[in-house]
Image (cartoon, rainbow, N blue to C red; front, side, top):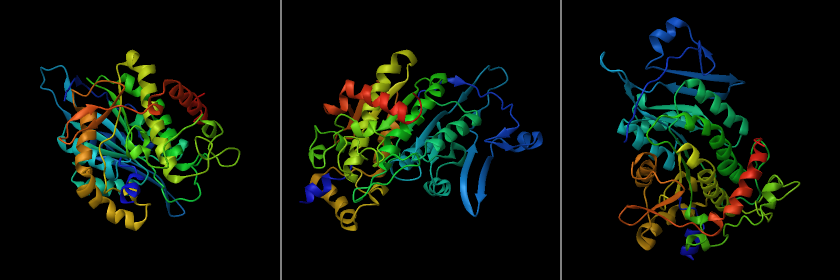
Amino acid sequence: MALQAASLLPCSVSLYKEGKYGRFKETSFLGIPVSDHHKASQFHPLSLRTKEFRNGVIRAQTTTTSPSITRAAPEEKKTLRKGNVVITGASSGLGLATAKVLATQGDWHVIMACRDFLKAERAAKRSGMPKENYSVIHLDLASLDSVRQFVDNFRRSGWPLDVLVCNAAVYLPTAKEPTFTAEGFELSVGTNHLGHFLLSRLLLDDLKKSDYPSKRLIIVGSITGNTNTLAGNIPPKANLGDLRGLAGGLNGVNSSPMIDGGKFDGAKAYKDSKVCNMLTMQEFHRRFHEETGITFASLYPGCIAETGLFRNHIPLFRTLFPPFQKYITKGYVSEEEAGKRLAEVVSDPTLTKSGVYWSWNKNSKSFENQLSKEASDEEKARKLWEISEKLVGLA
């Protein structure tokens, strides 16, 4: 019984190249007018913040910190720059752990793409991330308008994009009724898949322009979406069916809120969204790797038994699951260790193979894992891509 309860949950749970930043020619930064004097004296390396208050509510918030640049000696022609990585959901859990590893290495400038601006800032400070190595830009993946605004704000920063990590996730295992995104999609799939799909498609052009030695797009997967594993075979199992619910808009009115057209199940909705993430990664690889040289990858960093992803589960589970994983299954992985693993996929020069689903063995050594039949179905991936394009307004 304990095994079944435990398995219902998602156990999701440098190379450098010389380059140079161009000068900012605009007189505004992220939409905020900045005087020439202010730009000259304060833009680098201090940060600018913008907050819009309406009726006492923060509507949009962004902060930027210019990545530090190693100044070249007069006789040198170029400068060495840090890599720029966007990580969604970086205010807690796996995202924060990964951001901390990369930011404290000193080789990366981390853009924390988060829904709660203040939470992200506090988390970054609490974790000891050097201020010059991170920035926060508001992103709510449950709103396609917010995704587009994030992309606009990021481009206004003038930074190149070298790596995009799609990590944020919604998990509602005890929900009896579906909740929906701003556009009316079931929340788990709308956030975990459709929000990330639009973000990845829009930022693909930015990745293409990167002159970094290894540019990458990484989408976090989950063992629970893989039905060739024990955890993936515990009901409710992931199953996209013929995608009829997705094609209908997942709105629960004209169609089912579930991808396969079935009755709503919060745990299954999460697992289905993870299958979508892994299918999307492979379709990106088939469509764009050869042309762009971008590495597209997914991963399962191990069973993170103590994580905010489980905050919506029952208290008893949150109490029993960590010791169960530590002492019974021996599959326990801390957020810190999982963050190191995801950071490897971001920056390790040996993990540049595209189209791979990475996992780690008991000795914390990475290896290419196998995806289930459904999670590697090329025809389903193509169909998922085409339907998703229509739903997010790209087709």
